[in-house]
Amino acid sequence: MKIRFVTVGKTVENYLVEACSEYEKRIKKYVQYEQIVLRDIKNAASLGFDQVKEQEARMLEPYMAPSSYRIVLDEHGTEYTSVKFAEFLSKKMVSPGKDITFVIGGPYGLHPRILAMADCSLSLSKMTFSHQMVRLVFIEQLYRAFTIMRGEPYHHE
Image (cartoon, rainbow, N blue to C red; front, side, top):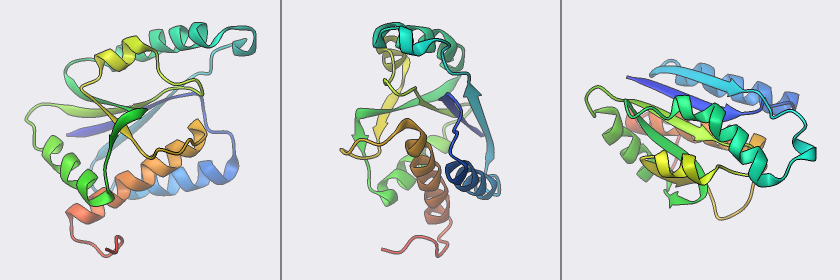
């Protein structure tokens, strides 16, 4: 079982990079984990939102293979409490032969083609976060889910 986390564009704020790195290190104690950071679209400022999302979709498609359980983070996705997310993740992890791939698009969201390829979509909140901040929030929740599954004291109800 492997968890893959695919994002568009690198995180540039040092405080976010450091926090994400800390949680990634912690996650690797529980599961094989890989983060894949795809390059930002060049000249995105001169393109329309749809053009940017189309170019990002072309880069994301190879990571949307049906051999993996594909979960996109999208504002219209299902919201979970941390405990319910841990239960969801636990069920997906026991599915034979499938890794789990989480995908976060760029600042304009995901192209409808990528949304259609996903097995499910997940929303972290009804609030809007920068796509770089979402990475940290999600990675922390992923770590929290593992501690909940193991009955470790990180999560307090």
